[in-house]
Length: 77
Image (cartoon, rainbow, N blue to C red):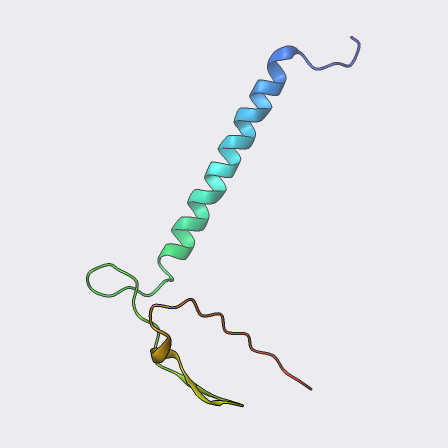
């Protein structure tokens, strides 16, 4: 033996890798789909209305409806 893999082994490894990725995606979907809050119709529930003090006044989440919002929390100390 020269230590080289047989021609069919690379195909087997590719299918095994694809299977493992699909299995991981299925497990992640199963675990996290039940965590997301939904309303009675099955669609995503709205986030609760919150407000934060800012330098420009108060920030109300309900005023941002329809916009993409990224909240970044940091601790200055």
